[in-house]
Length: 132
Image (cartoon, rainbow, N blue to C red; front, side):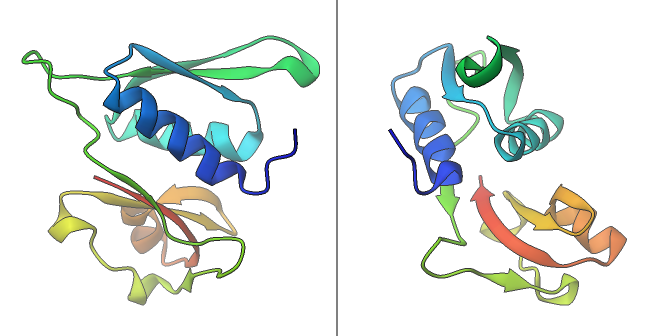
């Protein structure tokens, strides 16, 4: 089965597992998806991740994070740049997500980075998604 938008697939699988309060979500592997998951881990939205399998059967298993009161850490995930309408921003045009409570993930010439890193490095790029 061919997936036309792998980033949207990643976000949907995490969103669905999060709503069902599952411990983890398995996602087909790609380097871009792994870079997005690394940022989610670094920013504290997920516990961690693990790459399992070999070759074409590789998967990323994302360990979702919940509070002690069984509340979700990730309240929302939104795909901003889509295959039919790409959204590019300069470092000056990066807007705060949910008034600074969330974050944006961008694909830049320096790799996949969070909005804070992009502003600090003064680099713009494609706005992949927002997380809050």
